[in-house]
Length: 272
Image 1 (cartoon, rainbow, N blue to C red):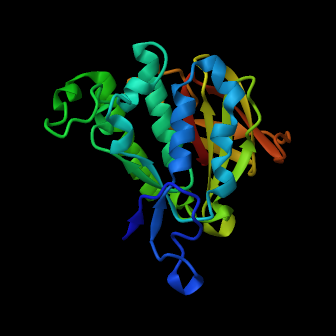
Image 2 (cartoon, one colour):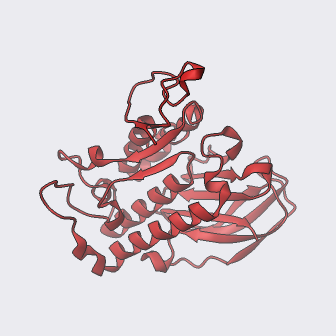
C-alpha cells in the first residue's frame, strides 16, 4: 500500500494512472485533520459557531481514497499532545479525547493514529525517549487504550464502518444542524443497504437525558458503544442496552428512538 502524505488540493492523487490519476492507493486527509483538531481545541461555546469544520469534510470525503491522520506532525514542536489539546478540566480532556477517537473511527476514511495516542500521553512526541508506558497503570489512560481496542474490533466486525469508507453510499447525515445543543448524528451503511449503524455525538459538557434521533428501521436498536462507559473511565451515565424505535418521523426518517446522550460522548446504536 502506497499512501501520499499530501496537503494540497491536487486532484486524483489516489486514482489509477489508467484514469489520469497519480496511482497512490490512498491519500492523507489533511483538511479533515486540521478542521477537526481546530474544533476540538475550541472552548465549548465556540464549537457551535464553527460546525462547518465538522461537516465540510463530507463535501469532498469521497473524491479520494482518504486516510484520516492524527500523525506525528500534530504532537511535536510545542503543538501539544492530543490530550493536551483538549479543553476543560482533566476529566473533560479525557472525555473529549474518547469522543474524538470514536468520531474518527466512525467517519469515512481509513485511520492513522500515531504512537502515544493510545496512552493519552501528556508529553509531546520525543524521538529520543520511549513512550510513557507507566501511564497504563492509571484508569483514565487505561480506559483510552481499552476504547481504542474496542473501536478496532468493532470497526473490523461491522461492514457498515469500513466496507464503504471510500464511497458515498456508506454515509448519510441524520442531523448536522443541531448547533444549539452541540450534537451531530449520521448513519454508516453496509453494502446492500442492510446493516446500518447510527452515530450520535455530544460536543458539549452537558448531558442530554432525553435525546431523540431519527432512524431508518423500526424495532429494537442496541447500544454497541458508548465512550462515557465506566469501562473507559467515563462517568457511566446509565444508557439502556436496547431502545425501541417509535413510529414517529424525525430528521426525515420514518422512525425515531429516544435515549440519553452523555456529556462529551459518542454513542453508536444498531438494529438489534
